[in-house]
Image 1 (cartoon, one colour):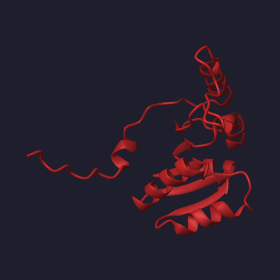
Image 2 (cartoon, helix red, strand yellow):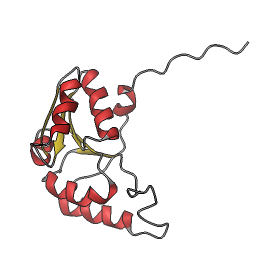
Image 3 (cartoon, helix red, strand yellow):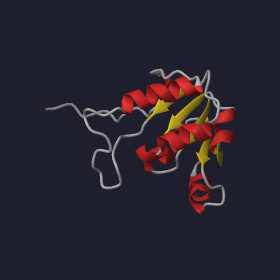
Image 4 (cartoon, helix red, strand yellow):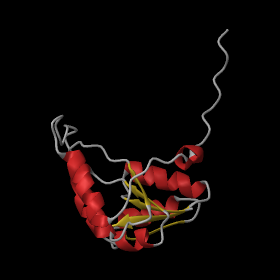
Length: 144
């Protein structure tokens, strides 16, 4: 499966690395192609992994994973271009750099997502294939 991961931080980098190791083709979408961090990440991955601009990473992907800081979501979605027909997995959390909630309980964040979905023509679905891609947890020894 072709997976675009927007973001190369601890969450996006870990998910992309693991999926590449399991045989999926992973392309990390990054803002700055000259940045050394994506190059370093991809060089350590054993599998089909590369990086490109966000738009280029998303273009041929079957699945798009949004793994950016919450404050960068709108810019990442906008730079992704056309998302119609693609599955979007959002692994972001609404927290700021200080780990405080970026939105409150009465927030309009869900409404913002709804507007982004309408503007870009994609549907957000829960999918089960991701759970099949995770490594099997080690067996626990039986309690004696």
